[in-house]
Image (tube, rainbow, N blue to C red; front, side, top):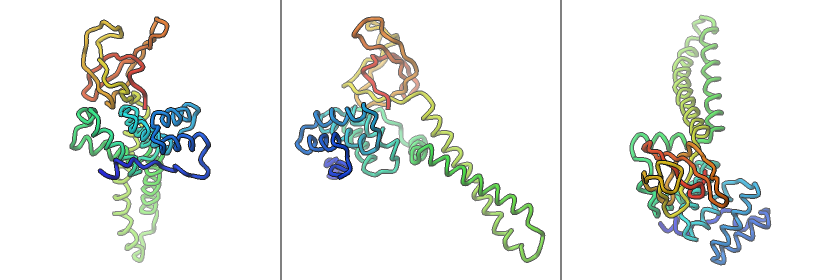
Length: 256
């Protein structure tokens, strides 16, 4: 709890940090959290993308009371550094402090498999799977082409279980890669950044209510519709974890 409350800021005083990053860190140190979040956000809008930036932006948003945006940026940071304990710890803490904890994935096998899938990036799953498949192929070739000499029998006895083991690892790696790719190339994930938003059956203000989404809740974007009125945001179709769909104003959610 003490660790999470400190919300440690990474590379706060790094000598090679860009001036804008140092300005944002100085604002954070001075307790001007909204201004710090705005400064970090300007870096993100300028095209800067790093786990440190998203992590620090999440911290500033958390301190400013913007739990939805804090969760959003911790999620962004975790995608780049999935095994960083500071990022994971602050994300869990922010979710527990928000109403989104009641909408998180259920415990059990589904939650465990999601955590295992997200433990590596798509690039890491690719490298792992490629390595395993090559080892399986090389082991199988060695088993087939080694001459049937008695002195080579110990080598073959060692190769057989190795090929089986690497085959199992290759299946695991391939499954991890497929599921990770399905997340990254499937419907975009988004976080609710307003206190709560009414999800309606149609993309109009007077459409019947379907359900309510709360700040920090994760939704999946399945469609978009522009607004014909000047100054009025468009609409996005979102899907909840249980499969229920509806429409929300575009400014109520932000994609991870």
